[in-house]
Image (cartoon, rainbow, N blue to C red):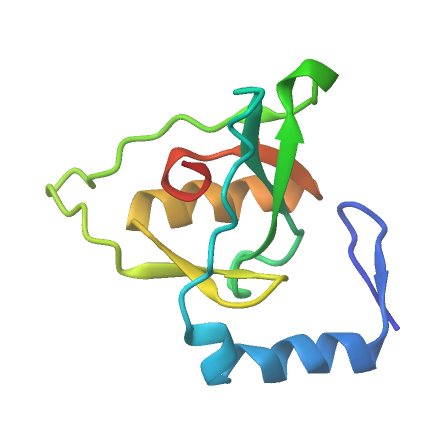
Amino acid sequence: MRCCLSCGEAVSEDEASSLTTYIGTSYAKAPYKYEKLEYMSGREIRLILLLPGNFQDALWCEILHVDLDEYPEYDAVSYTWATEGGDARLNKTILCVQSGSVLITTNCDAVLRRMRQLGKRKLWVDAICT
């Protein structure tokens, strides 16, 4: 059993090793398949539940659909897509619990790595949620 010191969440060694194994599979490297938002009400958006981890660990999230009429609590992440050197390539990944991964920029990767040290977070991140 391992315990996250920031949030107190306990993870069994079996669960931790299965996530590590998942990272190397083609299943994880395939692009995440977005489900359509419910546009009938026009009030549904995507959020991510950013999972906690150490700075160097792979980034993990769960992509959620939420109804704005239910007043969900979340933080919107603001960052610049390009680095100071002008690099805006989608050359990093965040793994999705549902399956697959989403390509993100270096700056997005950096901000998410810092934010996840605060524990699980519900976030709106333009590169992932739109």
